[in-house]
Amino acid sequence: GNSDPLGTLAAAHKLLKPGGLLIIGTQYEWPRSAEVAGASAAVSGEEVVAAALRSWFKPAADSADLAYVKMETSRKLECGLQHLTFWERRDAPEPGMDVAASSTVAGTPESTSLASGQAMYDEEVTVGQYLDFHYGPKSQYPKACAEFCITAAREAGVPMGRALEVGGGPGRAAIELSRAFEHVDSGDYSRSFVELGQQLVREGELRWRSVTDRTSGKEVERTACARDLHVGNVTFSHMDAQALPRELTGYDLICGFNLIDRLPRPRDFLLDARSRLNPGGLLVISSPYTWLEDFTAKEYWIGGFKYGDNDGPTTYEGLQELLVSQGFVEARKPEDVCFRIDELDNGRKSQQTRAQMTFWQLAGR
Image (tube, rainbow, N blue to C red; front, side, top):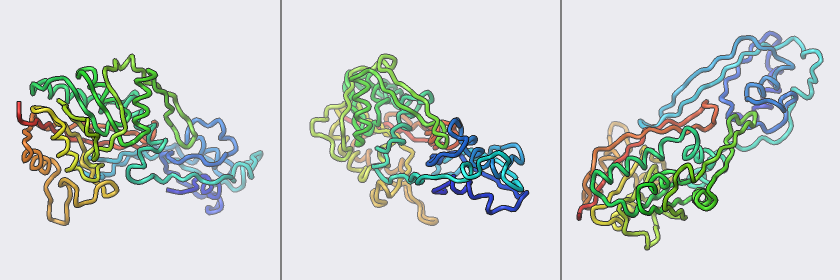
């Protein structure tokens, strides 16, 4: 993307002849890094763009939305809605306009590059997105994952005693599990996420702001209330999934949602989980299998890769081979669990993903 979109808009009249057509396509995902005359009260990115162009341009046609889908993997899509606006270049600046103020911008563009690997989960914008994902008005996935676990445990005759969720983020799934299990331990590598879970239990409430339009800077405030969520006996702590504390053992359920494809050595985690389960305990894994070398060296992927015409095993097949060899049996058929992460609350850019949940019972009861 353009590192200085407002600067580009301010200079656009220099590139076009009078009567020339300028077409802008954007999802308004860029932050406004400088003030534009007349845009201080703008409540949408569209209004910011109009304020930046209006001295030299006039609308040429009605705006339009253009949808697109980009397939990242067979289970993960990037979906977007480009907003197209059409502008005709004037012969001269609009009379009465402060040309200098409306067609120049000042300030240093903000960096919009994303951090790679685990560090991205401590970025302020990412934390807000994940609070929305766990506790926002469109939140579905964490609760659905917990409900599948509870149903599978009851069907398999597993005691509803102690549960461990690893990689639990801000903790919605663990809270849902705490309504059925006697005690739940939840942990994440991100200290920011852990502190949010602890705050919800300690203070009874979380408050955060969600960006609804990054270009205009519009935000809304959201809350999550422990009383409304019926929080049970749950604790949150910092955990490294590859080096869990020794005392975390004796569980009837261990689960990890969207976890294994973000670990450096996922096989090690799965083998370690076996030793922490009670005989007859349940291991539940949900993942879209979006393996990335930013997180996991390719040699440690559990299947899920393709070289030319040579197919490797799927991750599900890799899990079957590994876990059956360690004394697990499938407790029920895999389930697909879909979820959506909106990068902006305006709905113009989202990740839409289909995770696969698998259920493994350790022999011994």
